[in-house]
Structure formats: C-alpha cells, structure tokens
Amino acid sequence: MFTKRFELAILACFELARSTRTVSASKICEWLGISLDFGHQILYKLKKSGLIQTERGSKGGIKLARDPSSITLLDILIAIEPEALKLCCEKREIFNFCVKDNEICRLRNFFYSTFKKIEKELTITIKDFLEDGLFWPREKKRQKTL
Image (tube, rainbow, N blue to C red; front, side, top):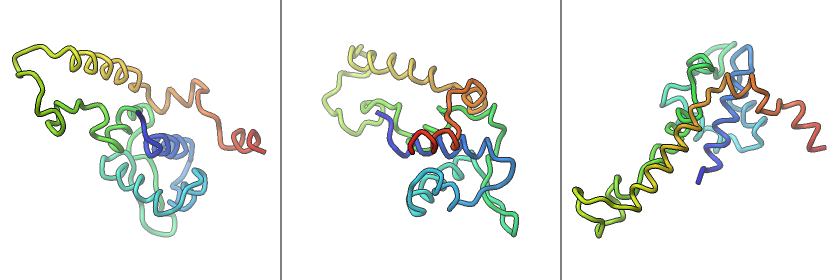
C-alpha cells in the first residue's frame, strides 16, 4: 500500500530532524542509499509541500521547514503520494459503474473506514517517533548490517 518513496521520505525527514544543521541533498541520498536523481524527486515533493526548505550559500543545504513536533507521517504521505488515501470512486477515475451517489456502497464504506484508521495511525509526529526510540539511528543501522 505504501510506496518506497514514502518510506524514504520519512527516513529523510527523520535524518533532517536529528541534524543540528542543514544537510546537502547528496548527503541525504548517501544516508538513504539512493541515487541523487531519485532523491531529488522525493526532496522536491517535500519542499513543494512546505515540509522542508533549502538554504543557499556556503552553509546552505536542506532542513525541516517546521518543528518536528508539527510534522506527521500523514503530512509526509500527502506530500509524496497525495492520492494514496483516496478511493477510486472519489477520484472518479475507475468506477463508472459505481452505485448512485445517494445509495450506500458497502465497498466504499469499508475502504473509507479502513483509510480513516490508517490516517489516525499516521498522525504520529516525527518528534514522537524519534523520542519513543521507534527509529534506528544511522550508526546502529550501519552496525547491524555489517
């Protein structure tokens, strides 16, 4: 259901939240183990949505645009995959044969309630995630893979 882009965007935001200064795009991509081109696609969406910002100059780079306590995983999902929690019939792209709008569709209701539960789970903030120890620091992750 969730894409690799979403996972990588979360990890990039975690790393930016842990950093005390701006970080270059190449450094973020190195941490994530992805190409710079792929990283730029992810970072562009995060910047466009106002979750990260860039600074130019000798001390320039990327940093979070807001405090980590105000950025949720849902914010990141919406930035990276804006259609992820929308039903096909809401987007009106696939179901031309769907029931009339004034009738109840059991399938739509099922997915709607499921998406609402997922939304609720994704309201955890970056700060909460990092403070609860739910995220492996880079150093521990590297040691584990050796």
